[in-house]
Length: 165
Image 1: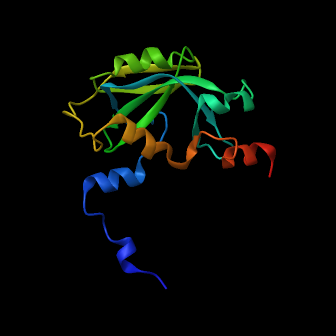
Image 2: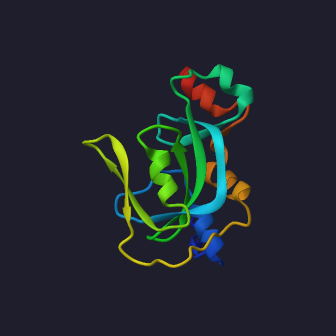
């Protein structure tokens, strides 16, 4: 039997933002701005078969194929469509880091150009004002966005997936 209370709108905007917070790239129909201070460089991520990104702890990196690892900078991003997300910006790949730099503290449209195989940054079409960051710290935002996709042990379900179990 369904519990109607489980489907009621959240009490706060932060709860709603937390529920949909994800790790992703900018969408083609949005403009973004990046938090000027919330960034972690030299992080390691792996994209799982289901599309989810995993944050990889150095203690387990020797158990992962280096081909699968992406060295990146995690950035706090706000969308013109509402909400926030964490962008794992690949270092020196497809000019993503260069495009991301243009959006630090500025609203920009960042799109993937499939012909040039690179990210392209362009000016915003509107003034979206100051973004609302629903988390007190970037640590809290990263933990929420990655959730159970933080791989810090060889017992993590990620390794069972890789092994085909």
